[in-house]
Image 1: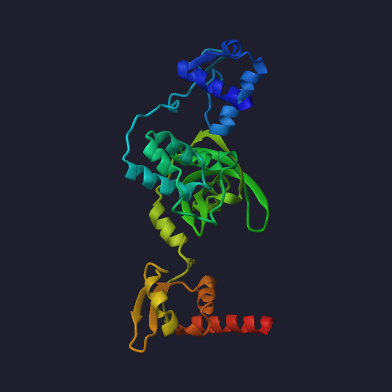
Image 2 (image 1 turned 90 degrees about the horizontal axis):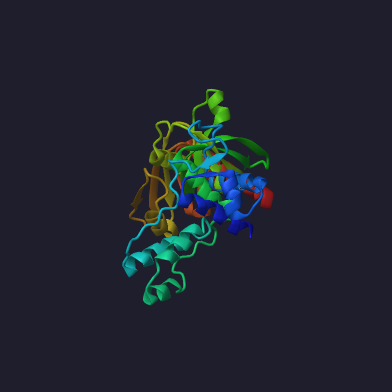
Length: 320
């Protein structure tokens, strides 16, 4: 019933853009406080701020007006070939845990019985470890914040289990390791003069409320940021030449698996693979090499070899 009333409230603004609160009461048969409650619900759920006289003197007193820069659910008519719908369906199967909205949109595209039958076939793509962001339409609200450049008030739980609340400007979403990561800037950092993007895991965001404030996006190269911050061996510091020799049992796998943008792999005459990258030394790199046990030998640098030996020795002491 509540959802139906909310939908009826939005439909009024498709008829005309401006309504007096008394008109809304009469049309929907609700009390005055419900008119304002639905207004707040529209703001909190979908980030749409109805314009009022207190914020915009062009709006008559006691009236609500749909913001001119917010589309009011325009409907599009398009046609797609079965192969195109099948390609969309595959993408939806990957996105299903992110947002059910894409699945709903695809169902609306299905008109012919042949395509409808194909749509209901078994999925051809499954992502078992993907996080679920359907609660409270988090993905949709974050997407709107990015596209409309709207600030948000969010609560975030960090790795230590602490929850902090602050104002945040959202720039882009980046998928990595089965998670979606929101990149942007905290207003706390901006006030402190620390202008550097930070990364938040989307499934760690507990609350996300769109604000009316808009922000000016600074110069930001999302592709460059993603390649630098989301590589398997990301770290601060100067890159060094790293060479690791892998035994014949792992050589084929190492050659066909891309681990770093600077990676070069050479298969030796004895069947081993010489793996080379230029990157800072990191704990993640040490863990990765140790995971190959006797099949991986560090050629250079000496510092990395020592770190691998220390880590392996520590594992032996704990488990020996």
